[in-house]
Image (cartoon, rainbow, N blue to C red; front, side, top):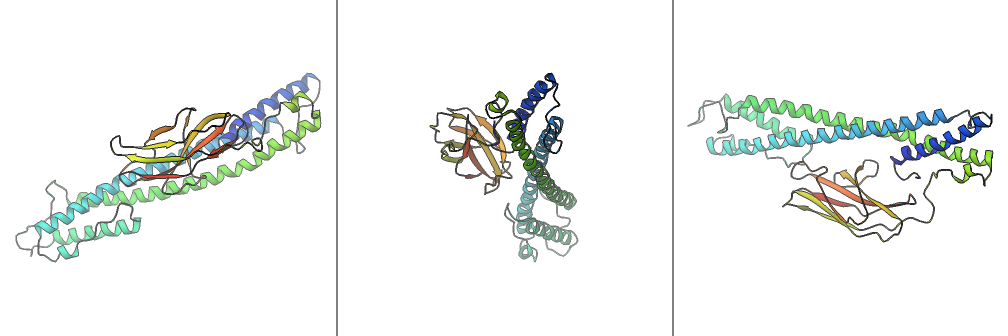
Length: 323
């Protein structure tokens, strides 16, 4: 299978490794030295390089999972604190009606507000709550302020401290994912160049008509056979609480499989997209919860057509927001 995406470097590498194994076995049987590329690179080096790429891909999956978990934790904690602020505003407006605290209440930040804006509102709330608890001059109110559900300033401060730690965890996870992706991608081009050089070496050693040359794995998909892209559409289904994606059918007779990929956010970036699943021909719709943790979460999807020739084409991008 030729190289079509990052993961295919490993499967293509396995094909080259198997081919090289057969070549070396034949050479040893004929009292020839094992095949080495001009700089002394041998099959064991290829095996190690493919394993390094596989390990980097696995590590990147771990980094991406870590980022997904961190962002989910962040959004869950934001929901807790944002609801606390909404309740705080109600409590003050009712219990301290007419006081100076009512006009000092912070605005409730939107769920997608930046870290700076969100924390500023929470810090403002914490400061007001501290002042209220120390103020005995408000008529018909005896401090400290405790919500009807039992929430206290101390609990809020604990949750706010946790929020700051979670924000840092998200930044750390983003950096891990970014650096891991760079480290992984730096391994890909040298490995692909080895595939190309190996093909050249086999043809030079054995000639164009030899079975070893005729059975060489492909590095690139066959030219001129890129399939037509399908058209993707989707929406958030409030009844099933899932995103529902649908696409037009590919009519290419070499259709092998559909591949669903997704990106957290409102734009699609191939470098940061995540493989979600393969779907057999005949499937034209699929529900998914990928990336949807709380209301307001946004994910962008593409569906890819894969042919038996190794060629592929991606659809239009579709962005869905959880309601």
